[in-house]
Image (cartoon, helix red, strand yellow):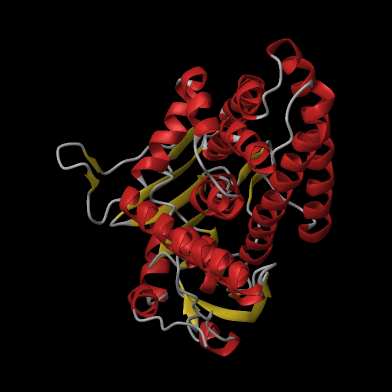
Length: 416
């Protein structure tokens, strides 16, 4: 993990001296994927999931829009998988164009150029979480990736320096076309999506390791799971003398979004049982529950409406990320924090008692929403009319057994 972080830092901060080192390293396609691409390229999809489902996107005069867990998970996982395919195709294009610009064809070196050149864009994907200016940071680092590729092609593909600009330009044009195709596929499947800095909190400089229980320690553990799963893919490919098995690929994706442990989401009836008969003194008027699979990972949700028939209404929604709980476990590493105010209202996201919490209140309409992530697996949200935010918080605290959900998350058994 420390080598990975060092490589990311070096390629971003000192690319002119890092590219010769990269070009000279003995490497394989499988090694590049398992030790670098699979990990760094996941940063953007993880941020996408957190932004679209947990933080939400503020729409002027309309409030905050949040995608459902199922749709958000589908978008993130599909974007991740297609991104892996995209970087492979981009490397193929770089390799194919090499002779045209006086370079030497080498598929591994081409993958180095594509992967390490994309580092800026991949790291910039994390900035999706940052409100208002996140897109500027993402765009700036994406543009910087073009410069990284320009610096890298003479070293990796042995292209003459005076032809590197043209080589880069043509490669980027093809990359943009690939991006359009990939995002069109993602859009057709997920139908809607909204794209948010982060550091490495928890680093103990004196001992050279991450503090136990810190967000960075969680990231380190996730990276180890990814590396182990990637090694399994490489071994499977060797055994088959060709493509790896579907089981090995499934385990790899599972390590990316499931934290290395596949967990079945609660059944419709099980999650529905956590909806109380009354909430904030209001009787329950309707309920719904479902469990669905997205890219092979189960997610479940339960919803209920509460009202007195005289205009006072509350809504409760409980989501179980199931096999994708690893994404929520990494949320602490993303260091999510947001706060903004306007006349008569506010919205903020923060951490309390080890949980991610989001609240939004509008005094003009006398309504708000309060949500909390429980056990790095369950999302629980209450919204509707109330006298204050404290009333919403009290209704959730007394109406939903958060401790029981926490225990379910802690005692979860592997799927099977």
